[in-house]
Length: 82
Image 1 (cartoon, rainbow, N blue to C red):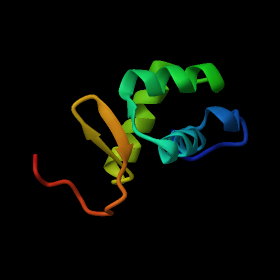
Image 2 (cartoon, rainbow, N blue to C red; image 1 turned 180 degrees about the vertical axis):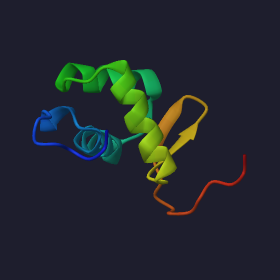
Image 3 (tube, rainbow, N blue to C red; image 1 turned 45 degrees about the vertical axis):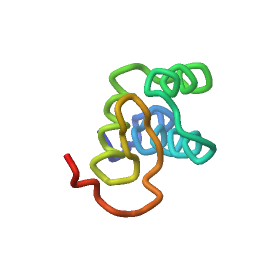
């Protein structure tokens, strides 16, 4: 769930995990699997949470997926080529 409740561990909230993804992608683009392994090593994240975070960031037009590469959407434009 995106909205945190008072009973939830804030570090496992999708918005907080999304901020970790954005921080990592500010440095450079990643392969989807490599990004997951990096987040898994540094933060407590499972595969379901990871896919939910990536889906949310993609729907919000924050990240762009090209084949297996993920990067920040620096152009600010929607990708309608697909």
